[in-house]
Length: 194
Ligand code: PAN
Ligand code: ZN
Image (cartoon, rainbow, N blue to C red):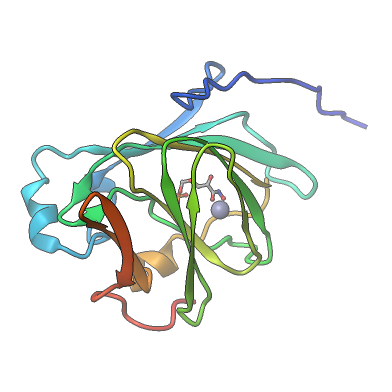
């Protein structure tokens, strides 16, 4: 039996950084063409191409049954038009795999959607544990003025289906409303998603 050695990593709770041996994924606006509802606002930001979010994985988990992946997501503050910076969002390739999110700092909204386009949302802050149920697409949104940072914990072989959300969008979007936010129907949503 080839046992996985035990280990710890230290997360910087404020920044979300997991110092070495880091596997970091960065998503800029140019990595998410057409994801935001306001195409003119997206165009206006094209040259600046802001960094929207980063994922710092805790380790390079073997993608096999029984192993767990985890990492922090750091969504920077900002908006494209009225719509707050957000992750791409995905279903799991093994759609039945659930996931746990744990808020570390800042304020965010977790959007959830069934393949029929029914959405729910949950507000998250430091200390919030959010359950992402099986079969639901999930996306997170930074609705605050600081970084929104959370830990995610999921089956290492859950996989990612980005294509469905890339094509359909999410049925709900999160937009600024005064100093706060509101969740509204997405004018660009185009139907059943998976
Ligand atoms: C998270 C997400 C992370 C980035 O670790 O992968 O927050 O979001 P996108 O993957 O949608 O770009 C997770 O849900 N893993 O399964
Ligand atoms: Zn996931």
